[in-house]
Image (tube, rainbow, N blue to C red; front, side, top):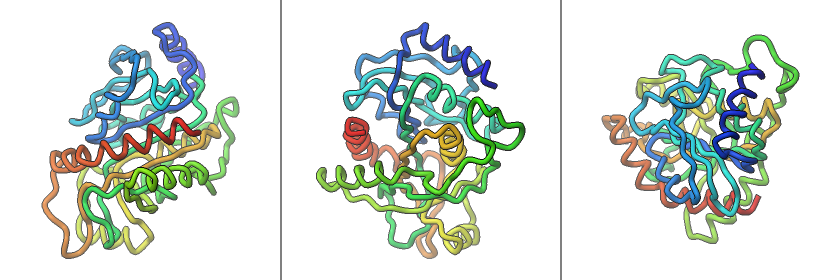
Length: 269
């Protein structure tokens, strides 16, 4: 795997992706953050060696390099999912490439269904921990040149970055919560019984991504910060018919606030 990573990194560096300090992964309906990136270099995933293709509406499928929050960053405008038919190595390959490019921290976002009865659509939840019901991306042979066989996950989401984000959100007057994110394979939205189960085992929100990327980043000792935009509710009495389009719309409505927090957070780390 390392040889493929190095090959992709050499290609990106030849196209101007030089020494980014932060990596960003943007979820469903949240790609608009990229409009705030200055001096952009943009490459479609289809043109990048060993990159999969994003097949989901709301995921543009582009890798973007530029200036954001006063730092050089590399951003994924659209991610990859198990439900698209990709394996662990393909889903997380871009995270390994970002690390090899030089990022010092990874910032992620997703759209999620709220299982916490106190949540409402449009809330921004800072992820403090996760429950991963997706296949672990570290299954199989381990390359010690990349990371250890048994990485620690006691601080999957960096406490200092969480504290800074809460301070920034308070100063900007943006309400945020802390919660536990649970990931499933999808692509179906959850049944009422599944929502009840996820809440019972400790989840505040549920989605179809993020945890494999975080596990992969922590395998390489990259600090992580992630937020969920609550786009629908899995709370008894509040469950409504959900479509991918309704999720996109709800995410887009909170995107500006998330961008403000992310920009100042990246500037401060």
